[in-house]
Amino acid sequence: MGKRVTKQDGSSSAVQRKRVQGKDVTPSRWWLKRGLFALFVILILVPVSLSMLPELIQHFVYTHRIQLPFFVDLSRPADHSLNHTINMYLTSEEGISLGVWHTVPESRWKEAQGKDLAWYQNSLNDGSTVFIYLHGNTGTRAATHRVGVAKVLSALGYHVLVPDYRGFGDSTGEPTEAGLTTDALYLYKWVKARSGNSLVVIWGHSLGTGVSTNAAVKLIEQGEVLDGVILEGAFNSARQKIPGHAFSWYYWKFPGCGYLFPEPWAENKCVFPTEENLKKIKSPILFLHSEDDHLVPIQVAEQMHEVAVSAQNAERVKLVSFNGSLGYLHNGLYKDPKLPGILKKFVMSL
Ligand SMILES: *[C@@H]1O[C@H](CO)[C@@H](O)[C@H](O)[C@H]1NC(C)=O
Ligand SMILES: *[C@@H]1O[C@H](CO)[C@@H](O)[C@H](O)[C@H]1NC(C)=O
Image 1 (cartoon, rainbow, N blue to C red):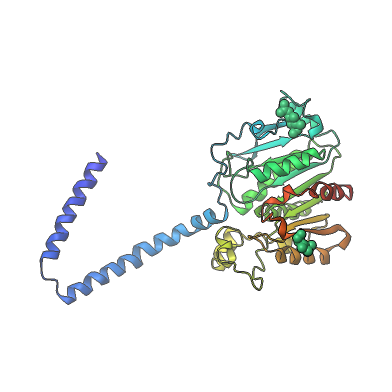
Image 2 (image 1 turned 45 degrees about the horizontal axis):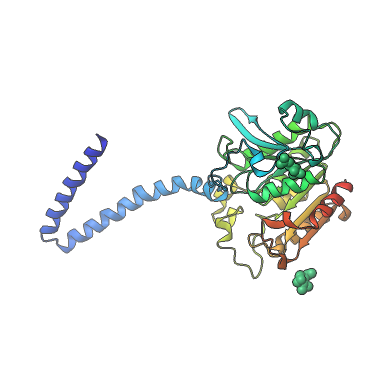
C-alpha cells in the first residue's frame, strides 16, 4: 500500500519536472530555483544533520554495534576454550542488563565443569586475586585478544570478570561515558561483596582505560581505594597532539573526540579525563604499552606515566613497554611470553 503511494508521487513529480524542462527557463527563474534549494539546505538539512550529530559522535566513539567476531553465541564461553567460565547477566542499573563472563583460576577447571552460578559466585571467595577487565571500544567480550587476556590471568591463578558495557555485545542500553563508568563501578561492588579479602584489580584496555580511571576516582570519592590498576594502551583526551604523529584518522576510530569535534560536544559526550584522574589516584598503577601501538603512540603512555608518578610514590607506578619489532600493535600484548611474569610481579607488589 505505502509503496504504491510512493510510486504515484514519484511518477507525477517526474512528469512535472519534464514540463518544467520543456519550457524556456529564464535566468531569473534559474536563480530562484537555486535560491530555494539553498534555503532548503539551510533551513532543513543543516538542522537535521546537527540534531543527528550527537548520535554520530556516539557511534564513532563507541563502535559498539560492530560485533566482532560475528556469529558468536556469547552465552557459550566454552566455545572459546574457556571451559571454566560462566556467562551471567547483572543489572547495573534499572533496565540495564550486562553480559559478563567469569573465568575461575585455571587450576580449578576440572572442578568447574557443570557448575552453576552459585558455585562460581562462591569461588570468588577462594583467596585468589580477582581481575575486572574493562575492554576497548569495538566488539564484545568474545574478541580474541580479550579471551587471550582472560586465559593469561586464569593460568596465573586469578579470577577474571569480563563485562560487555551497556550497548555492547548482548548487554542492553546505549553507551555513554557516565553509563560505562556506572557499569564498571557496579561490577566492582558486586565482586567486592563476594570476594572476601582478596585483592581486586581493574585492568582497562584502550577505551577501558578511561572507564577504569573514571571508576577509580568515583571510588575515591566514596572513600574506597582500588588495590591496583592496569592501563593497557592508555589514551589521553586532554593532550592529544604528539609531534610527528598524524592523528586525523585515529580519532575517527577512537575516543578523545575533543580533537575532532568542537568543545561543547566533547564535554557532553566523552571527556575521559584520564590525566586529571591520574592526579587523584593513589592505587598502584601498571601501564602496559606496545612501542608500535598504531592507535595510541607510546609517547601518550609515557606522558600519562609521568603524570601518575608525580601524583604519588614513583615506586607504585610502572610503565612496561614492548618492543615494536614484536608487532603487538594496540591489541596484541597478551601474546608476550614475558607478560605472565610482569603481571605476577605486579600482583605480588600489591
Ligand atoms: C579446559 O581448559 C583447560 C585450561 O585451559 C585445559 O587445560 C583443558 O585441557 C581443557 N579441557 C577440555 C576438556 O577441553
Ligand atoms: C627491539 O628489538 C630489535 C630486534 O630484536 C632490536 O634490534 C632493538 O634493539 C630492540 N629495541 C629495544 C628498545 O630494545
